[in-house]
Length: 269
Image 1 (cartoon, rainbow, N blue to C red):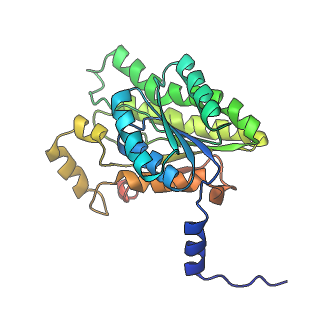
Image 2: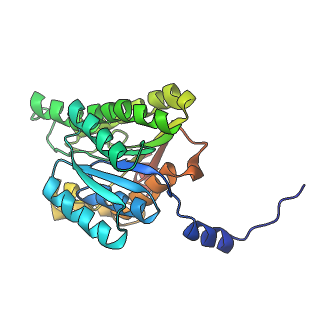
Image 3: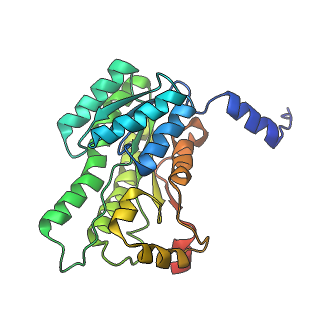
């Protein structure tokens, strides 16, 4: 039997009508700004019920109020220290009380501290590893129990290209993101029998408050010069990829790490 051909326009039209995350319950960490805020809004636009979390609760509430104006009743704000196991349990409880079992988790929260190897303290290293790597392990472990109730789900870990390219001063950050890459592959293999998919996104330079607070304008212009596409990534660029991985369109993907960096990692090779 031959399948009828479907034009690209028909596919886009159908996708716009049938929201890509309709019926899903998504937790997005670090949603008070940057990539997390973009992901939370895009997910709400695409029909998800979103649990937006961040340790900066005042700013998070502002983001959620703005989303509510466009997509009413779709998003709640939860104060969340991603390094706290108790907070992770509270996030799951809040999500299930508001919307039901979680089906999507975006481990987006992270910090960036730039210090040379001989200058970084053990405390700086530990904090970076806890926020950027341990938190993702804790999130996967805690949220997976909720996903089991739903019959499966999709976990999207935010990594970086920092553990693949030589970026001065990002030793702790690069190491933490390397841990994310390994964690993704191992969790993907172990959780696949539960129909829980785990993939990771590895951005290059993205125009977020975290980047602008860590480096000077001169540094940014110098970095843009070595990006083949000659621009910084935008939060929506990462959010669009997270949307694909969260949706059923990526249902045969798990354990994958996708680079989105304007071609930087290619130019380094």
